[in-house]
Image 1 (cartoon, rainbow, N blue to C red):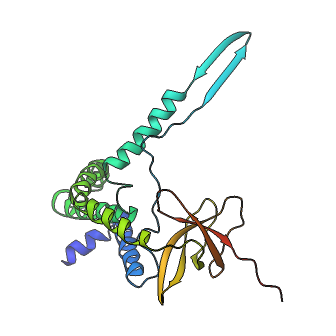
Image 2: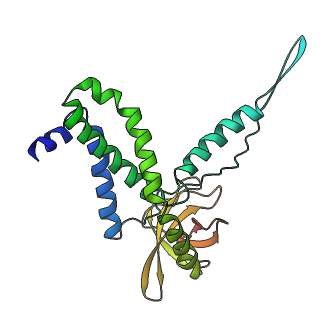
Image 3: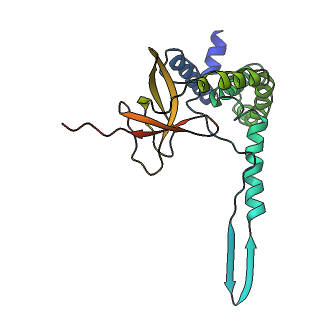
Length: 229
């Protein structure tokens, strides 16, 4: 056990161990209610369509169309993430299994196979990532219907529109934050964004919930103006 601990904090494993400790810290904050399980979620549009037209005219007509190339590359990346269940489950659920798998493979591999050799530690990075992604996909597949039912029966059952909330994490029109809503005596956490072209809403400030995104992943809020003295 002592030897495994020494390998875990060795320079070639310290990044994996650091990520693993961050995952543990995240779940501790979730359990005490400081963060929501979907706080770091983001949208993955598998049908991404990026249009970029470049027209160059230098004595002759030269048209360069990058639509298909850029669109296909972005769409391929999004499809890859979706294949490994990113976007189908809360981001931190998938990341937790991925980091745990990478940490275990790195530590055990460096201990039993590499025996502390730096060359092995570097060579196993990409194979470790690929194997860990496959392990993560297999482990998280049974969780997809569970979270799908939870999202459709849990948060959506409460109408937050028109409610006043208090920001627990700051939010802007481009950055997702977190807010607390008092509902029937309970304190509930929701994911929010500030309305377009509005000022950032800081932690502790109150805001009005004015809308909900179509995908239901976050709410649009507007900062409440302070009452005149």
